[in-house]
Amino acid sequence: MNTSALHAQLPLTLQQTDLPALGQHYRGKVRETYRQDDRLILVTTDRLSAFDHILTTIPFKGEVLNRLAAFWFERTKYIVPNHVLDVPDANVTVARACQPFAVEVVVRGYLTGSLWRDYQKGTHTAYGLPFPDGLRKDEAFPSPLITPSTKAEYGLHDEPISEKELLARGLATPRDWARIAEAALGLFAEGQKWARSRGLILVDTKYEFGKVGDTLYVIDEMHTPDSSRYWVADEYEARFAKGEDQRMLDKENIRQWLIRERNFSGQGTPPPIPDDVRVDLATKYVAAYEHITGTTLTLEPGDVNTRIERNLREKGYLK
Image (cartoon, rainbow, N blue to C red; front, side, top):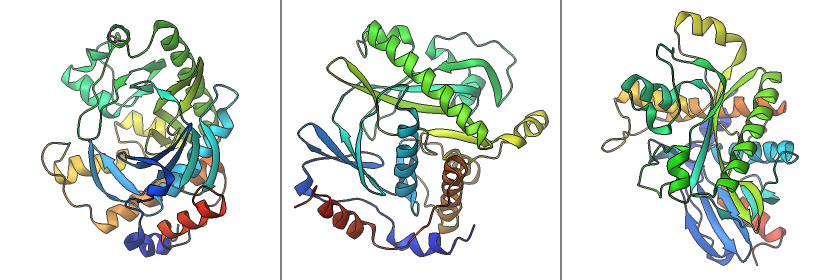
């Protein structure tokens, strides 16, 4: 792809927003959340986090994530309701305020990433699941596995947790956890099916859920390159047979760069991220979007904050 727009956007990336008129404000790793009574206004910034550190910004990352999440929420609403009420700007979702479950529901189809690193160290047993010896990196599981983790505040680490421990801590009732697990596996099956039809493998992903009354909703984001792994499907078998890394269109690219090029995996101060690495990751995020949606993303360099404020005013969310 032509990367001129990505380079032009480097000094204009959306680092954060400051819109107190939108309501009570919470700043997460990637999103700015503003609460207005029973709705949330979620602004997806260009911030990039990895290994529980905010590292830098990536051109158009927030737009790609928000657009792609909207695509998936619309596509999967027949499986489980989602929190989306409106998308008034490329970076903004207006959502139903739900009572969130303090757990990240990670569904995995393959032994890779952090689970592979845990498997090598023998620390994969924290999930309380049986793993046979002798599995290979990037090997497919017979059926997808749910490997939950606690949802930590920024600056703290998410921790793997078993279903037994999750229930013992009261992070969900047995009934709610059964509904969450069923919904997560249904969403993942639809995601894998659609990704395959678009030449990709949805390898693993993270879901978050919440409730309003007794109704379960999927919240946050869904099937984005930030929360999911995507591999190029027609290269999987050959690369797996040779023990080569898969061709990835997701955030794992920056994790691997940090580990291999800077020997950083979360301890200490993160290294600076060069502009060429930022642009390279942006190209992969855009490629994932275009593969999945089958549409070309027209990128327009400019001041994102100004555009967001204009669109929110036009839609009546800002006075």
